[in-house]
Image (cartoon, rainbow, N blue to C red):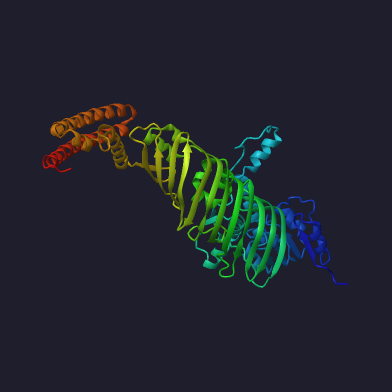
Length: 539
């Protein structure tokens, strides 16, 4: 009978592996997992044909000399730094290792540690086990966002690439790495770039959907029902109904990878009802970029939307290609702590503009060329009426025009305000010239009407031709004196309302006197004409 080769297993391994080896070899196994000294290892291996090591046992010239029958040492490890390769080669002993078998396993552990650190898993677990948790708090062990974050990797070997794939494909992360040499372009793209979901071109099917909960990126979508059909690389949605952003929505449209699997095309017509401004901001990255004001907006909204865009590899809208139009409506809207409105309140000296509490707001909008453009819409902030229009850009720049009606403003009833810069660093420009012109027009029209009437001058000339010249002079002088008095009064009253009101009143007063002088000259000239007509016997 042929003798089975004898092998030594130097550390405990799984019983299943021992059984498989015993079918082919005479096995001596250290299943008690005793840590042997080098001398004990040599004694145990003296009559062995082979030894299975686990990476912690040194195989050197002394061990090989003590084990003359040894023909192979199999290392249950990725590396073989415990082998004296030169001594093994000289003794004719083969050495083996197990490269790559732990790449994905180690990458799992690496990413698990990343997740645990970012989300403070270990801290919160200890906190719970210590019996310290007794209530909820909004920021308790909140940690940091992993999805969509940037992942930095030092050393882009097999394990580094495995971690990169988990971050890019599983969590939509942007991957940056440092390595002694750059990876080949195809390897780099495969490991660090997420890929969009491709619709098979050879698959045709139709189904009625009933999904209780769908998690996509940061969104939680509930109770999805409707018809989906797939054909020629396009997924069509018809009559879809779902719960999203704390409200409900209905939608129809298509998702297609037929033209370019790496850049899917999305078309969507949707209506949202009772959705939360806050949840929309938190869950939809596009809103953070295009409508950052949602972060500070309380209340719910309804929305009609018609949208078309290309998607990137992470299945997010490519905002440079996004075209959309629609109307957003809210019965009750609350906005505060917006620096743009705070700056406008400071400029106009009206604290009511710092906090917006408006009802029945309707805003038509269009998204094109990377900007959200809003048609003019009205807001009533306390007793202040504001008409607002403008745009917000991908670069967070804003360009809005506001027409503010000032209650009790006297001659200064409306002010135009240009809001530029960004929401976090706004630049306010007041339309001083327009305000002064409006104030002048209002004052002059009011006072001229009071002083002259519409037709009294010509009637007086017709009745009293003999006193016409003197009366014209008297009326002109009185007009000028009254205008000067009114100018002084306007400036005095406006001084109590601030520098802008005083400036407008001063300019209006000067214009009022100037207009009065012109009217006085016209009175005199008209008197002379009438006297000439009367004198000549002409009417």
